[in-house]
View 1: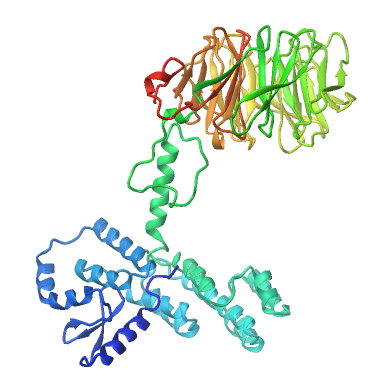
View 2: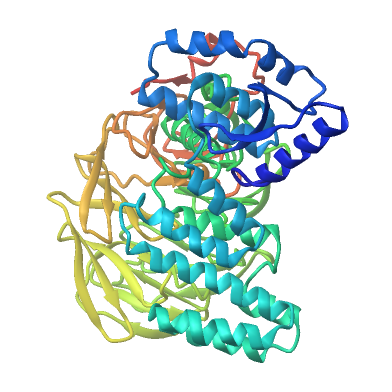
Length: 601
């Protein structure tokens, strides 16, 4: 991409030469208010442009001048817009159009000193560019920045000498020009080390530098511009930057946006505001799984998104396979023998193993090999234990488990006890990504962090009511709590503050599990005792969707980590519902209202 003002002198010379060859009279260079140079002949513009634009300027020059005097003065914002358009047109190579725009508007794309500086940098005329800094100094808010700009210029000059094999000249720049600046001595030491590079490719690799030429000099100009006021030189590609920001802001404000954000502008239309339809959102029943014959207490997608595990009061765990193209589920394996029922499930980080826990009166914990369907470990330390929750260490070789009777164990894959913490009545567990810290909610309405390595603990979250369950975002920053009689609360674990209380859900003293989900975990879903699934955008307290279809309490929801449009819910009605977008996008909104009522906040 060509930088602002680059090559204007050459364009002017070319226009001059073409005019002379066509037998036109001698011409003189005239600088427009935009700082770019064009050619005039007896007051009329001459150009080699064949489309007649310059001819139009020539014929109407006097009329344009008188009309300009009659025009009202442009506001600052109007001038800014014209400069932004001019810069974008210039980057596209439409230089004569820029000349016309600036002449007719009376604006200036950039200060003439900035244009001269830009040309000298792009042509590698370092002594002239350094001299230009003296002119720019008076235009800068912070004259001290001249030293930093000079350092950047000399660094480029030094690297180009080295690449050309001019070691003595490079050494002279280092000793006589860079070092006397007494700026960033650490960087000077690094630069001096490049003298030992054996060849140009080695230099470019070690310096992480593009090499002598347009690419590195354009990058240098971008850095230099940050020290200049925008009234002197516009930031690079400023119009594109503003358009990207506008598109990103519209996407962030879109309550139903649930796809990967494309950083470019080519994938969107700038002619329309961004808006996602509710029909693209997972609030329509795609499938109802009825293989369980009693209440379904838990459901959880595997980390790779290809399987779903469901646990039931009917003493079984069912593992379902997901067709990633059709997003349909088929029964893969049934794991039997959980006498007390299955109220909690946890996949190992690599999805090889699945741990199943029971309700409060269950002292056993099962570790299944999902691939073979074999029970690897059935762990029970004591018949008086209550092992109701479990969490995997990120290494996949250890896990922690516990319950409300005061058990809190760390074990290996064979169920061998590695560590234990006495007297902690655990309600729910989570292992952080550091591999050391375990978060545990307890009967004191709090979440504490426990370090099994140095045996330290600390308070992180304190609620006023019992924490029935919680889950943590992928980045470990946010925790989502289901709080008895209060609903769903979002906490910032780093700042230890309550961020938001989500409204709508009915939460008593049943254990209900919520989850983060969607692309970038922008959404939150939770079951509810009023038989519904509630979905919120993470930043909005009011639900954006209430999913109906279950006939009894919804105990658990799970959002597929790979397919952001797939959501599962488990209910006391004995079914698991799979939610997805509307099956046909042309279907009328009214047809989906029976299963999805949406309230926009």
